Amino acid sequence: MAATGVFAHGGDTTLVHGCVNNFLSTVRAVGPNTTCNNLETPRHWPTEARIVTDETRRTNTKNKNTTQDSAISSIQNSITEQDTAIAALQGQGGGGSSGLVAKDSLGQVVGKVLDVSGNQVFLQVENEALWANVAKFGFYHIGGFAFFYTTNDCMGTRYLPGNEGAFYNQLLTSDGQIGCFPASPIQDRLILSVNTIDDLGSCFQINVTRPRV
Image (cartoon, rainbow, N blue to C red; front, side, top):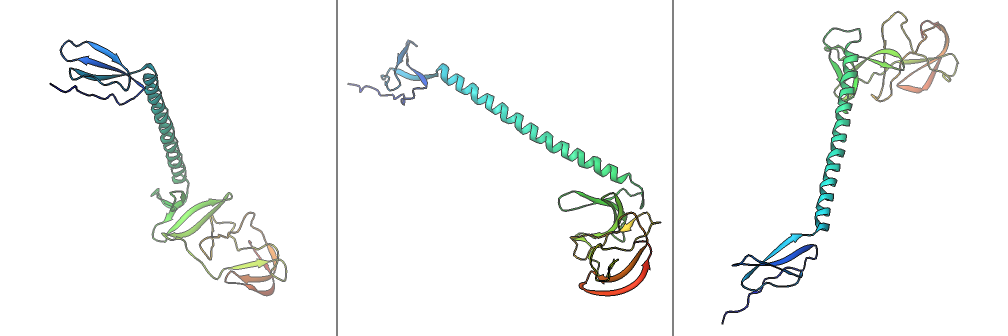
């Protein structure tokens, strides 16, 4: 006597279950835990709820793709804005026609290259046209420059020598992080004391009219 076949449906209640006769191709609807006999083959079909769930998954996927497209578009716009800034900077006057620009480690434009051999760049800070020496490690550290004061104790506003007739004034830094420059308007001042960036603790009293600070 042949043994009765056992074919499990697995108990998945999200599917419609049936047993298909292998010879007559008739379908017998059964429950999720019913087994088909040895003359039948188990078959499963999605219920309406399962179809809705699959459609929801497809909708969610489309929404995710839309979000990703928006993110990509935002990045592209940022790149376009950066390219526009570079193009505007390249169009500024002063220092050759190479159109080269210097960028920092974040890809932001530092300034237009004025002199490749001297690593000089043109940049604009607080509406002041300046030039500075830069390298791969950042701004060149420059020591020894002096601050001038209209007080006799090196207190109050610090002044730097400026050149009113020059296109650019120099951006000075002693640590590569903080820059100093003479701001407009350039004018004459009675200077009573002075110290240097390398020794701000010392103060030397003088009495001289310092032009163009």
